[in-house]
Length: 190
Figure 1 (tube, rainbow, N blue to C red):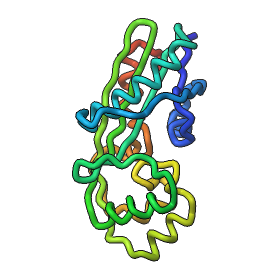
Figure 2: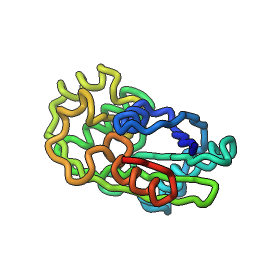
Figure 3: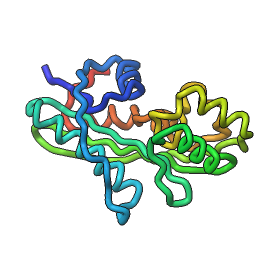
């Protein structure tokens, strides 16, 4: 039986794979997440996803390894995970009333090949009050999320509109992942 390894400790990615009833294991790794400022957002997320998948693939040479990375881009500025509440507040102030793009890069490494792709979703925020931002930051939710928000939880009240794959904003474009795993030879039976 083929093994699928998720090279991520993200509870959101884990939940998305569980929702479609795929059997998988988790093996995350600490990789250097720095990147060249000369890379485009899509190159950044694909590069980081591939780094994660390839490191884990060394421990599982016969498995299919799935790596992913998500960033938020506002006017050309990449917003990763905030370091603290102050940085989360600043990110949310920037996003307030504006439209930004969410990029998720995905890498599939199998014994036969390595493949990577990205998805982009456009998100527009409501104009946020200082009280709303402070309340959301004090919830603790922004700290482990790119762009300092999670669309699938409390942060859903920030979002006015999205164009594209909702699950991409959550952290994994799951319908595309299923199709790409099939193309890579992973046996998905539904």
